[in-house]
Length: 212
Image (cartoon, rainbow, N blue to C red; front, side, top):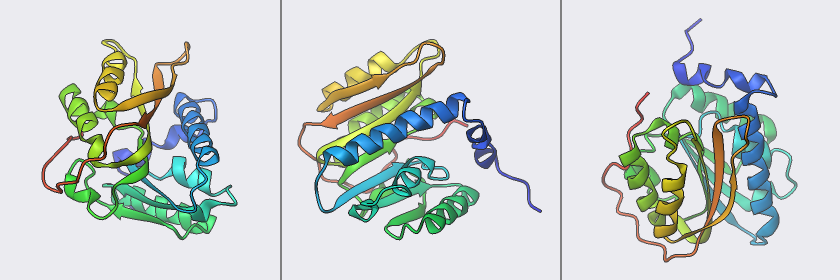
């Protein structure tokens, strides 16, 4: 038996439906459901950045009769999480999701899968430097299709960066649709719609590096 990696063990709180991680997941899933319900396109594209085991997107599509509308790519570096995400997609009978083992901090990872109608930045902004958060937000117009939705998360632990993140998103051409910040926990979930002009992807360079 091989030891689990840190990023596989990180998923253990999902087993407790009352854990902050599970509560955050449910909020993210609710926003994905709302996005699907508000979009009537025959085909939609989605990318999940640092997707882990794919609980958010795969979890929603597994219960949707219209799951085949979504062509998605999960970007995940940890091989164990890639295997778990693929198993979850297979078990749910979802054939239109690709789990790509890649470093999502590199722009090259997005070649051929952007622009996307939904970009999930869940569990990213809290694990990179503030400067990399700003750099990643500035790069989002290169990942987003016209009218795309970005769902992101970030802790509000002091010093709280979320007000600044929301300003950066506004400056990058995004309009806030929702910002969930429960009083009894430190996580937050933001939902922003891209109202700017999509920018071409130049698949060279680094936008963020994980700190842990």
